[in-house]
Image (cartoon, rainbow, N blue to C red; front, side, top):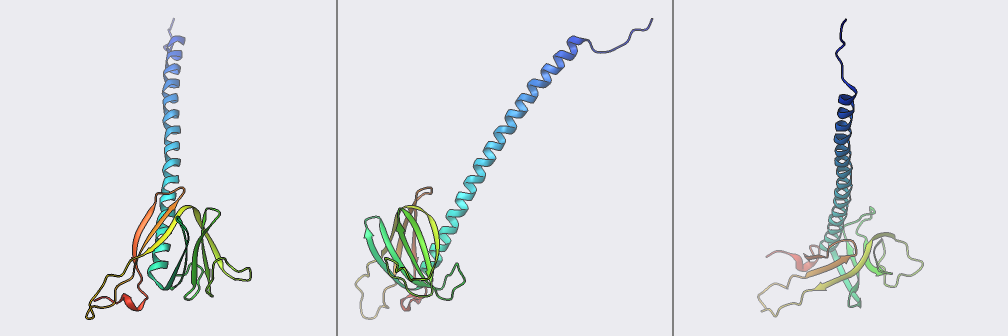
Length: 182
């Protein structure tokens, strides 16, 4: 009589139990990896959006040829400017930034807009997010002698959107007569 060699029932059950424990840990690792990937993808998109917003604001302000600031409240300004930066393929558009219902808007048009916006106005609108603070501060000119050039206009932007960290940056207008370098 020949004896067959094989696995006993106990050996098969033990190997299946060990395999199932390993598979449970692998599944938990996979689920954790998917969760962290989703979190980091969302965070990367938020950072990318914030950097794009900074770029648009910086280009609008630095390429502005005229700029008007209207203070609406301690946390809100209306900024109207003519700039050479356009998101909607316009030549030297007028851009207006304002907050309405806690949302920051950017309007771009071929004609200068006043605030509040007239109903017959034509413009493109961009919603930039839910804003807590939007302020633009102009630097105060220093007393200067007659031999010095006219002072350079500097502006400080303070923007705090609900889902992002506050943004502060200083910008110099490049398209104004006072913006020539010494």
